[in-house]
Length: 286
Image (cartoon, rainbow, N blue to C red; front, side, top):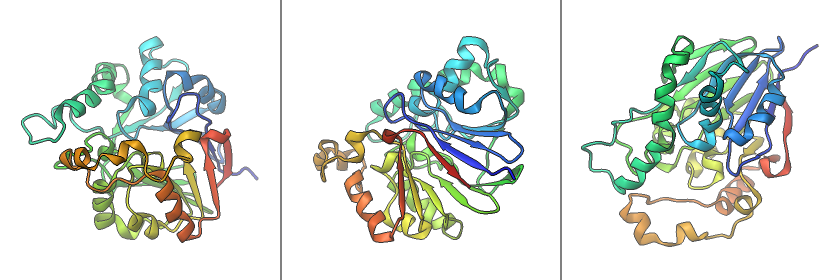
């Protein structure tokens, strides 16, 4: 009997996030896909299959750069896509707001979102804007969208706009957290705590500067999926980017966690297995 299979794809470019789920009917669910350099590997794992849904978590280049590059190149003709699912924050969201570190966030929004928006006419007939609380089914996979962007989260604008969703098969559940940070994690916990328990979790924001311990404690995963290179997975206890607490506080980033601490949390929770993209592509039966 055919099985549901999840591929966590090895990074070609650092920090990229790319997952392919092959259903029992040999259809595919793609999650993000990484940068342009990651497309050959993604195509290899899709292997010409029908893509029932391509889910884009948020508009950062390490998540949707490859998708954008394919449609810029040839309109996406290399893929048989039925539905493109996303819910990106409006480009104008941070205008006229008291946003800490405004210049940085404007640069982040300019990285990919305008290019994606330019391409919308090409695939607008395939798009579906996911709503929090919505459920869709693809073959044996049930997808529950449990978090979308919230206005008012301005300290970590793009990352905190990530879609969070749980994919449940008859045997396993996998929670995808995108690049959510601690503030978005607080809202996720408050609004969707009862939906968090999952067998497998994709570690938010590559396992650093991510959601808090309370979120992971509610998930209680057996398996963790880490999209990160060696230098991040095995970084020092207090990495350089978290040591300047004055700047972090000024920018509204009051609770930032590195991977070393996050890994300690997983030890406390008794996680049985870690899959890390630095080690190659991982095949997991669901």
